[in-house]
Length: 172
Figure 1: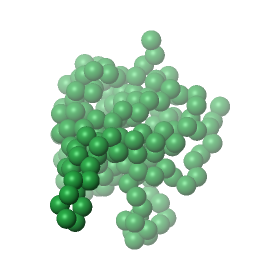
Figure 2: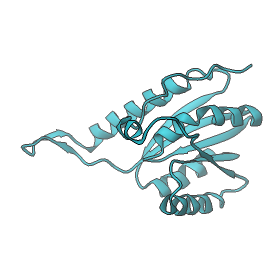
Figure 3: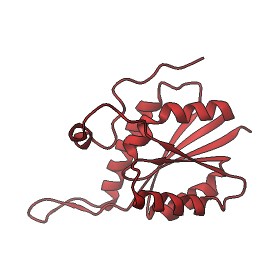
Figure 4: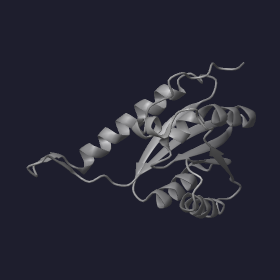
Protein backbone atom coordinates (compact mmCIF):
# COMPACT_ATOMS: atom_id res chain seq x y z
CA UNK A 1 0.00 0.00 0.00
CA UNK A 2 1.42 3.37 -0.96
CA UNK A 3 1.42 6.46 1.22
CA UNK A 4 -1.50 8.85 1.11
CA UNK A 5 -1.45 12.62 0.77
CA UNK A 6 -4.53 14.71 1.54
CA UNK A 7 -4.62 18.22 0.05
CA UNK A 8 -7.17 20.40 1.85
CA UNK A 9 -8.75 23.16 -0.27
CA UNK A 10 -11.11 25.53 1.51
CA UNK A 11 -13.02 28.55 0.13
CA UNK A 12 -10.70 31.40 -0.74
CA UNK A 13 -7.73 29.11 -1.33
CA UNK A 14 -8.73 27.67 -4.70
CA UNK A 15 -6.36 29.80 -6.78
CA UNK A 16 -3.50 29.15 -4.34
CA UNK A 17 -4.11 25.42 -4.55
CA UNK A 18 -4.15 25.44 -8.34
CA UNK A 19 -0.97 27.49 -8.55
CA UNK A 20 0.75 25.20 -6.00
CA UNK A 21 -0.10 21.93 -7.77
CA UNK A 22 3.44 21.50 -9.06
CA UNK A 23 4.83 21.64 -5.53
CA UNK A 24 2.12 19.30 -4.31
CA UNK A 25 2.89 16.74 -7.00
CA UNK A 26 6.62 17.04 -6.26
CA UNK A 27 5.90 16.20 -2.61
CA UNK A 28 3.72 13.27 -3.70
CA UNK A 29 6.44 11.93 -6.01
CA UNK A 30 9.06 12.18 -3.26
CA UNK A 31 6.81 10.38 -0.77
CA UNK A 32 5.52 7.96 -3.44
CA UNK A 33 2.01 8.89 -2.37
CA UNK A 34 -1.44 8.87 -3.87
CA UNK A 35 -3.06 12.31 -3.77
CA UNK A 36 -6.59 13.20 -2.74
CA UNK A 37 -7.64 16.77 -3.49
CA UNK A 38 -10.43 17.50 -1.05
CA UNK A 39 -12.46 20.66 -1.66
CA UNK A 40 -14.56 21.78 1.30
CA UNK A 41 -17.46 24.26 1.16
CA UNK A 42 -20.28 25.38 3.40
CA UNK A 43 -23.75 24.21 2.43
CA UNK A 44 -24.90 26.56 -0.32
CA UNK A 45 -28.25 28.32 0.03
CA UNK A 46 -31.01 27.63 -2.47
CA UNK A 47 -30.74 29.86 -5.55
CA UNK A 48 -33.70 32.12 -6.26
CA UNK A 49 -34.36 34.64 -9.01
CA UNK A 50 -35.25 38.29 -8.52
CA UNK A 51 -38.93 37.41 -7.99
CA UNK A 52 -38.09 34.97 -5.18
CA UNK A 53 -38.86 31.93 -7.30
CA UNK A 54 -36.78 28.86 -6.62
CA UNK A 55 -34.27 28.27 -9.42
CA UNK A 56 -32.22 25.53 -7.76
CA UNK A 57 -32.59 23.93 -4.37
CA UNK A 58 -29.64 23.16 -2.10
CA UNK A 59 -29.07 19.70 -3.61
CA UNK A 60 -28.96 21.09 -7.14
CA UNK A 61 -26.54 23.83 -6.04
CA UNK A 62 -24.32 21.25 -4.36
CA UNK A 63 -24.30 19.16 -7.54
CA UNK A 64 -23.45 22.22 -9.66
CA UNK A 65 -20.60 23.31 -7.37
CA UNK A 66 -19.25 19.77 -7.09
CA UNK A 67 -19.30 19.34 -10.86
CA UNK A 68 -17.50 22.63 -11.47
CA UNK A 69 -14.88 21.92 -8.80
CA UNK A 70 -14.25 18.38 -10.01
CA UNK A 71 -13.92 19.53 -13.60
CA UNK A 72 -11.53 22.40 -12.75
CA UNK A 73 -9.34 20.32 -10.45
CA UNK A 74 -9.40 17.37 -12.83
CA UNK A 75 -8.31 19.44 -15.80
CA UNK A 76 -5.48 20.99 -13.78
CA UNK A 77 -4.17 17.62 -12.60
CA UNK A 78 -4.50 15.82 -15.93
CA UNK A 79 -0.92 16.78 -16.79
CA UNK A 80 0.48 14.83 -13.85
CA UNK A 81 -0.31 11.31 -15.04
CA UNK A 82 2.47 9.60 -13.06
CA UNK A 83 0.77 10.38 -9.72
CA UNK A 84 -2.63 8.96 -8.81
CA UNK A 85 -4.90 11.96 -8.10
CA UNK A 86 -8.52 11.81 -7.03
CA UNK A 87 -10.89 14.66 -6.26
CA UNK A 88 -13.48 14.81 -3.48
CA UNK A 89 -15.96 17.62 -2.78
CA UNK A 90 -17.50 17.78 0.69
CA UNK A 91 -20.14 20.16 2.00
CA UNK A 92 -20.66 21.23 5.59
CA UNK A 93 -18.61 23.10 8.16
CA UNK A 94 -15.09 23.02 6.68
CA UNK A 95 -13.19 22.37 9.93
CA UNK A 96 -15.43 19.47 10.90
CA UNK A 97 -15.47 18.02 7.40
CA UNK A 98 -11.67 18.25 7.13
CA UNK A 99 -11.31 16.30 10.36
CA UNK A 100 -13.80 13.66 9.16
CA UNK A 101 -12.03 13.35 5.80
CA UNK A 102 -8.63 13.01 7.47
CA UNK A 103 -10.00 10.34 9.78
CA UNK A 104 -11.60 8.41 6.92
CA UNK A 105 -8.68 8.68 4.46
CA UNK A 106 -5.86 8.15 7.03
CA UNK A 107 -3.23 10.20 5.17
CA UNK A 108 0.46 10.23 6.03
CA UNK A 109 0.82 13.83 4.82
CA UNK A 110 -1.83 16.57 5.03
CA UNK A 111 -1.21 19.66 2.88
CA UNK A 112 -2.88 22.97 3.64
CA UNK A 113 -2.77 25.99 1.33
CA UNK A 114 -2.30 29.53 2.57
CA UNK A 115 -3.67 32.24 0.30
CA UNK A 116 -2.93 35.33 2.38
CA UNK A 117 -0.47 36.31 5.03
CA UNK A 118 -2.89 38.15 7.33
CA UNK A 119 -3.41 37.49 11.00
CA UNK A 120 -6.90 36.00 10.54
CA UNK A 121 -5.73 33.47 7.94
CA UNK A 122 -2.80 32.53 10.18
CA UNK A 123 -5.16 31.90 13.09
CA UNK A 124 -7.47 29.79 10.94
CA UNK A 125 -4.50 27.82 9.63
CA UNK A 126 -3.12 27.37 13.13
CA UNK A 127 -6.46 26.07 14.44
CA UNK A 128 -6.81 23.67 11.52
CA UNK A 129 -3.21 22.45 11.88
CA UNK A 130 -3.73 21.92 15.60
CA UNK A 131 -6.87 19.90 14.98
CA UNK A 132 -5.23 17.84 12.23
CA UNK A 133 -2.10 17.22 14.30
CA UNK A 134 -4.21 14.95 16.48
CA UNK A 135 -4.45 12.49 13.58
CA UNK A 136 -2.22 9.55 14.31
CA UNK A 137 1.04 9.75 12.37
CA UNK A 138 0.00 12.52 9.97
CA UNK A 139 2.45 15.27 9.08
CA UNK A 140 0.88 18.66 8.29
CA UNK A 141 2.52 20.89 5.65
CA UNK A 142 1.51 24.39 4.53
CA UNK A 143 2.08 25.51 0.93
CA UNK A 144 2.04 29.20 0.13
CA UNK A 145 1.33 30.59 -3.32
CA UNK A 146 4.27 31.92 -5.24
CA UNK A 147 3.80 35.63 -6.00
CA UNK A 148 2.70 36.42 -9.54
CA UNK A 149 3.62 39.48 -11.49
CA UNK A 150 -0.01 40.51 -12.08
CA UNK A 151 -1.70 43.46 -10.49
CA UNK A 152 -4.29 43.29 -7.75
CA UNK A 153 -7.10 44.20 -10.10
CA UNK A 154 -6.36 41.27 -12.45
CA UNK A 155 -6.15 38.85 -9.51
CA UNK A 156 -9.47 40.06 -8.09
CA UNK A 157 -11.30 39.47 -11.38
CA UNK A 158 -9.94 35.94 -11.82
CA UNK A 159 -12.58 33.27 -11.04
CA UNK A 160 -11.95 31.06 -8.04
CA UNK A 161 -11.64 27.65 -9.72
CA UNK A 162 -9.86 28.04 -13.04
CA UNK A 163 -6.67 26.19 -13.87
CA UNK A 164 -3.57 28.25 -14.58
CA UNK A 165 -3.15 29.29 -18.20
CA UNK A 166 0.02 27.27 -18.79
CA UNK A 167 0.70 24.15 -16.76
CA UNK A 168 4.29 22.96 -16.33
CA UNK A 169 5.41 19.86 -18.16
CA UNK A 170 5.83 16.60 -16.32
CA UNK A 171 9.33 15.78 -15.07
CA UNK A 172 10.60 12.27 -15.48
